[in-house]
Amino acid sequence: MLLKVENLSVHYDGMQALGGVSLEVHEGETVSIVGSNGAGKSTLINSISGTRKLSGGKIFFEGKDITAIPAHERVPMGIVQVPEGRRLFPLMSVEENLLLGSVHKEAKKYRNETLQEVYQLLPRLEERKNQVAKTLSGGEQQMVAIGRALMSRPKLLMFDEPSLGLSPLLVKNLFALIQQISQRGITIMLVEQNVKQTLQIVDRSYVLENGLITIEGTGRDLLNDSHVKKAFLGM
Ligand code: ATP
Image 1 (cartoon, rainbow, N blue to C red):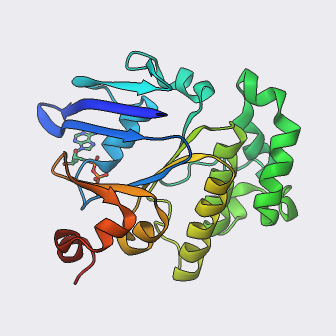
Image 2 (cartoon, rainbow, N blue to C red; image 1 turned 60 degrees about the vertical axis):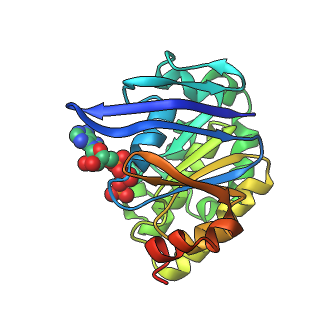
């Protein structure tokens, strides 16, 4: 077991955003969290990366209780999030942005090797390595954000709405890229609005509604679930 979340709750100013969420992610799996707007998906991912204060529950990573470990110490442990909205350094080059992903000790040791791996996976970034980030297209910026996350050598890579604002073709490429990353042995947690495409590529998924897990199953189970069909697939 790579990640175990136990009875997690989060409140914002007394308002409950997560009301006791439990889930598990095994090493090598790709797992998604689907749910409508405001269901608590981002809150859940941010809790796992350590940027949200919990009001209850525990988080275990590789069997270790990490609930009290701050976010910046979770990254070297292998818990890495590709942030929603990308957040690149606009005036730095593609390569400078990528290298900023490998500032912790363990990642630094393998920096050149990882950079070559990232370029192999995303050849477009190597072609544009000297280009200033702010002049990249939206899709290219998204690739840099993913490449930068990979530079920190994650064990668990979490994506929050990575397809936001991308054209259908780029969304298709993004899903293919996520599958390629998974094939490299990285465990993936994916929050996505494109429920159908997501359920087609994941091993398992959880449905989050009003801060609670309501359904859990394989991608195929959920594609055939009558509630999922009605609520998220427009069928
Ligand atoms: P979306 O798909 O729209 O991004 P989500 O499932 O990711 O939604 P969250 O962003 O986790 O949902 O929000 C869950 C609930 O918590 C929502 O009701 C939201 O308004 C509330 N919330 C989120 N962040 C804050 C905050 N910083 N302060 C107050 N309330 C917040």
